[in-house]
Image (cartoon, rainbow, N blue to C red; front, side, top):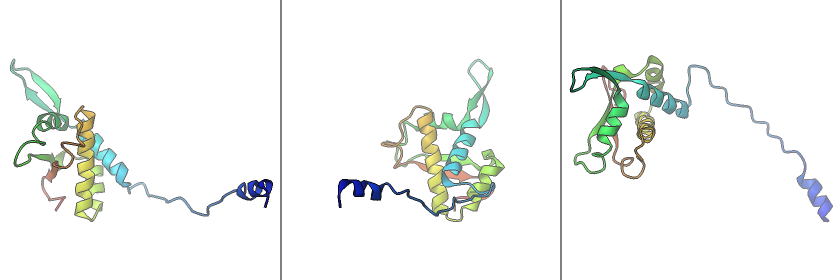
Length: 144
């Protein structure tokens, strides 16, 4: 077989008969669940009073990242990162509840919190990632 015949044989179009996976609007992929949980956590605000008596608004879970970021690598026992179920939007809560495997729910929450650490400027993957404990607390134990 000469070079021209080889080129012709390899230049045949390649077709795949695979059909795209269709996901209904109420089902989320794992990545979308992580992204939505991250956005939800990043948007939760709470009010506090500063030293001068003025009311200020802070981002609750970003502030938690800043407070715990320096302690997670060194503290014994490791402090827990607590997410209040009441802070989650119904869509996010529903997406997490549809995941029947609790370990997968824990992993998705863990990934979302690690991304939040990164968003506030704390490099989480070396010192925090292995020790981070994420728990959701509230009416029901979503991660049981």
